[in-house]
Image 1 (spheres, rainbow, N blue to C red):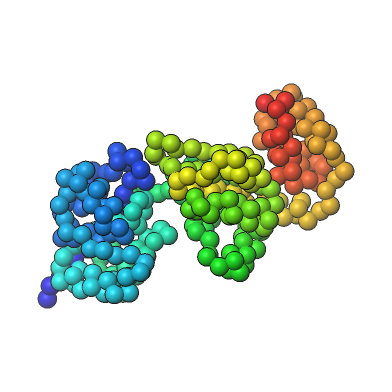
Image 2: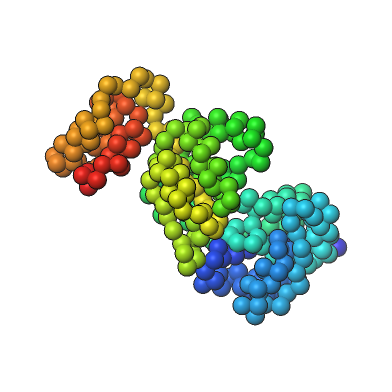
Length: 286
């Protein structure tokens, strides 16, 4: 009885080819075949590392047919490496379906560590990383997007989205409508020459990208619901200048800005996002 081969999950660089690991290069060289979303894109990567393995086209539109064919090859003892166009296979791509088929057929699945856009953006965002929810791409239909955003609106955890450049403006508008004006970061062109992090709030991001054409693939990091109870309370009659002054007083007393914002929000029954936004728009608060 032939022993089954191994399905290797090989991350590939988001952009900078120096992020390719030694182990990933070795596995790709030793694999009997490489299953790839876009064989032309992957061939450029393989040529750079002098890898000459056979390529198999495996993507969203042919996975139902091609998946079982790959499983058959694995059952014959061939080891196959699965790659996505960039980053971790199985995240927001059909790799997850091939993994399920392999597991159902008792085929070993070995993941390799490597680049991932969501985590790369998150750790540099400055947002809370203690607990976070990866959402990925929102559903295509308006109805399903709204239903999902309605559920996510009360999540207290940092939210991570993927978005294509032509959809960024519309998505930021939908997020603002569903969540209100929360802290947010847009990360684009990660690890590439024009890598950029745009930090602020959902409102300021909308302003920025209304004036600047979105380019490259985006990861959006959005603050979770900061305080359900505070949001459900009527806002205290405190003006923006009063909010800023209260934060300034605490900072002058030696309290760091983050704690000062939290304290002013708590003392006045305000959502933290409202205090943060007031401070963000006032250049006097350092």
